[in-house]
Image 1 (cartoon, rainbow, N blue to C red):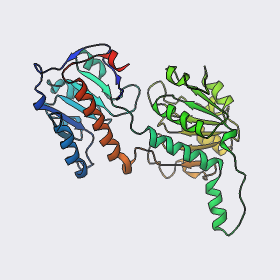
Image 2 (cartoon, one colour; image 1 turned 90 degrees about the vertical axis):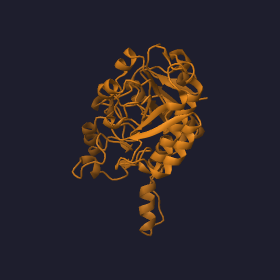
Image 3 (cartoon, rainbow, N blue to C red; image 1 turned 60 degrees about the vertical axis):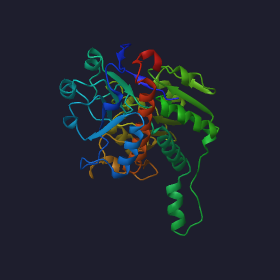
Image 4 (cartoon, rainbow, N blue to C red; image 1 turned 180 degrees about the vertical axis):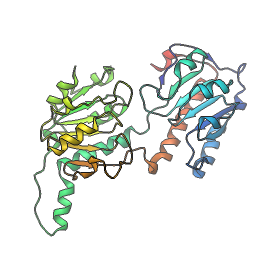
Length: 344
């Protein structure tokens, strides 16, 4: 079963045989191309075969200016879909995005609503990969694997102080697909407790065994030993992890972030310099960081880095999964209508 978020506020967008010939539906894959503007060769044949089973004809575009005028469906890999393309492409019926943002960033949802254009978010295919990176960062910091490697390479047979995960309380900020997956993995390590915080008050998260939802971020920071920041960037979450919150952490605390722009990086740099806590990141506000950026100066024992799960080496697999999800959606709903209640 494929689950989707829906942004059309209960509007119905009929899309049956009278409105669109299934055999002639033009689907534009926006942002799935390489830097050259051409689709990855390995993807072309697979996508064409996959789409042809539903009578869909695929085209690729690197920017909204390149979207064909007769496009009926846009599948965006996080690229903007704004008034320029909505005004020009009068045949458009559906916009599907693979971006994980909770706010459909870059998509003019209000205009789509007004024109009866459906907007859906495809499932986040990166949750498992990102969760694995988070767990590996936690283990590396608790077990001080970087220091162990250096010590052994220097010919010594000693080890720094190491910590067990089962003695830790974990706090999860953001309880969407990534937060839910992390809760499952941390439970497998038999952590002492799992705390969660989300402005959305996820009932699915709260319903899990051994999970306690906190009413405030401050309370979660005070009670947690390990904090994982896994919310999507939005106007409400930008800079959410502020200096006062970071000030609640202890020297043995560990904070990890998979979110771009959610942590105050100036405060993070300042407090790491003061040895106030440890950190690990797979995202910063700007990637890659400038050579002079203060976050680049800390040793791994204080700040550990990992490339994000959606980096180039796994983007093709992510795109393939996203497109399969889209075809599953289209097969299910082409000859009916898009109804918000179906996706709740």
